[in-house]
Structure formats: C-alpha cells, structure tokens
Length: 139
Image 1 (cartoon, one colour):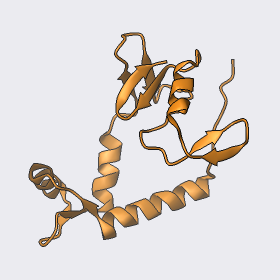
Image 2 (cartoon, one colour; image 1 turned 180 degrees about the vertical axis):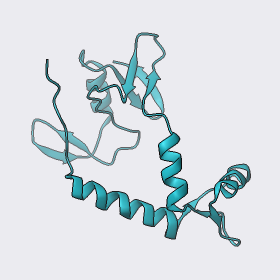
Image 3 (cartoon, rainbow, N blue to C red; image 1 turned 90 degrees about the vertical axis):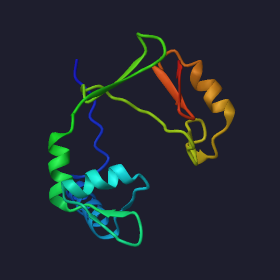
Image 4 (cartoon, rainbow, N blue to C red; image 1 turned 60 degrees about the vertical axis):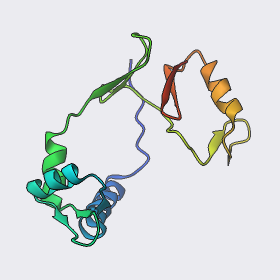
C-alpha cells in the first residue's frame, strides 16, 4: 500500500522558513524565565541579554541540537493502546489547545471553534486520540 504524501511547502519555501527561523532565534531571541535553563543554554553557547531574560541562540547551537534530537516519539493516552506516533511514517493530524479557528468541512470555511467540535471529534471512530486543553481524551 502506498503512503500519501503531504508537502504543503516547496523545498525553496522550507529553506526560506528555516533561514527566517534561525534569524529570529539569533537576532530576536527567546524569552526564558527559568534561571537554570538560561545557565544551561549559556553553557551551550547561547547569548543572554543582561537586562532581560532573552536568550539568543546561534545557528550552530540550533543545528547541533537538532542533529542530536530524537527523530521519532510517541504520545501515550490514558489507555495503553491509545497512542500517537510521530516520525514513524504515519500521517498524524493534530490540533493544539486554544485553536483560533476550526476548518468546517461542510462549508469549506474557517470559523471559531466550539465545544461541540470537541464533542463531535470524540465520537469519530477514526480518531486515535484528541488533545483538548492539555488533556488527552481517547477518541
């Protein structure tokens, strides 16, 4: 059985997005409010602003970290057989809590999300699990 490919961005667009992300991490930085994490990042080569807990991540630090990071992981639901496998070659469509809009397949439009959307999704037998407000709810 062949697997469907989902490539919403071209290689050129991906490289552009990657370059812009590296520039933001390096020039704008990231607000980090945890002193121990700031210390660890400094030790790894990050630059920290003295007046604010803004950490600037050089490209080498970002790329080295990405190279060492795991390429696959599994999220487990409360019930043992309920999992979401990332990096395993499976198509995984997920939302995150606090979505500003919901794609309505009946109208082909984006609209504000409602509690009924969560209730409807929970009744979908094809759904492996549903993440809502940080809670993993079996589908």
